[in-house]
Image (tube, rainbow, N blue to C red; front, top):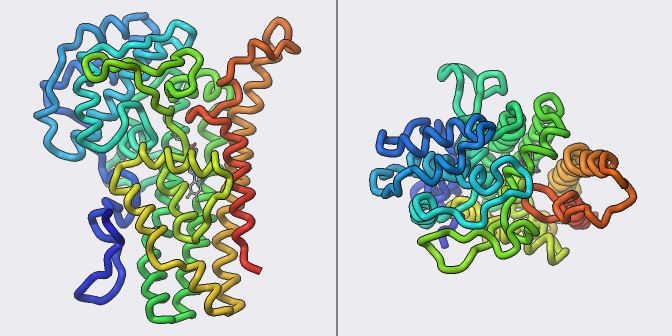
Length: 406
Ligand SMILES: C[C@@H](C(=O)Nc1ccc(Cl)cc1)[C@H]1[C@@H]2C[C@H](n3cnc4cc(F)c(F)cc43)C[C@@H]21
């Protein structure tokens, strides 16, 4: 497994390029490709017109007509990520279509075969994930302009009047704010190696301020995402087929596997930045199901990013170093980083309440017999990733608090 390597020449830590982490953008794909070779026009035409095709009830027919294409002409990483993103949108649209009970349990081989080959090549799953719809699904309107919401757009859309633009771009901007903290990690490790407590405290203070910047960016979500549309429209298209009552066995990838396979829908847990500060600070989640879910979500990340999280967990422990020094100021600087994680988790819980719990309750009220919760489908209170996101987030928020040093 790749490790965060000591740079042999300068004798100092750097984040090895093997982890594919960009200095400014961290886990986001820098300048994602927007066009595929003409051979793939059939995929792009469907993926670029999903809302209209679904509205006109033409999507599923168009998917069945597209020829089975080989992925051999997708030679570069960025074209592979763009094709994986497009096929992800096509697959979610094909399975969920109008978002009602009329789902499809078989993905036709002309999409399933190239999608699974491409997923294997990228080390990703054949389902739309955070790495697709957030990290590879963006462009600048003015290429020379800044990385701000007003100068960004996404490449593909689901139905929902642009709700996905807000949800995906705010997620991306949170990633970018957190990127400044990730850039500081080598300085933190170098300060530890040199036993330089002053530099250690400085690095921890920078990391904390970047975490709080990420929290401020996260708050933009209310401006750009409508809770009712998110809950009733976008959440459906991001849902997966693991533990789903509509696809209890999962999805059959025709021509690839003989039996249906279960994969989870996209979730914040698939964000490497969501997990990297826990790994850096030595925060381990004792709640088995939450810890298990986080581990499972790592298998939906680009392998290089999963490897980075593992290298942070195996690398020098900042927590042990702080404990060994017994320095009050250093402990405070460490605790402020843990405290920033608690604040982010708390805020995320509020977001789940606004975007999932409350709309679910409103929807229940709207039914004939609001008291009859028997027909409350098991997905009502679930996030896009399929777990009960509130329970999951409460568990990791609570366990994060236990890592504050006295
Ligand atoms: C808006 C939310 C979302 O769920 N986005 C999403 C989900 C699924 C899919 Cl498919 C696409 C987007 C969340 C944003 C902010 C990110 N975040 C949450 N807590 C964090 C703690 C940190 F320290 C940190 F740095 C980032 C953190 C992750 C996503």
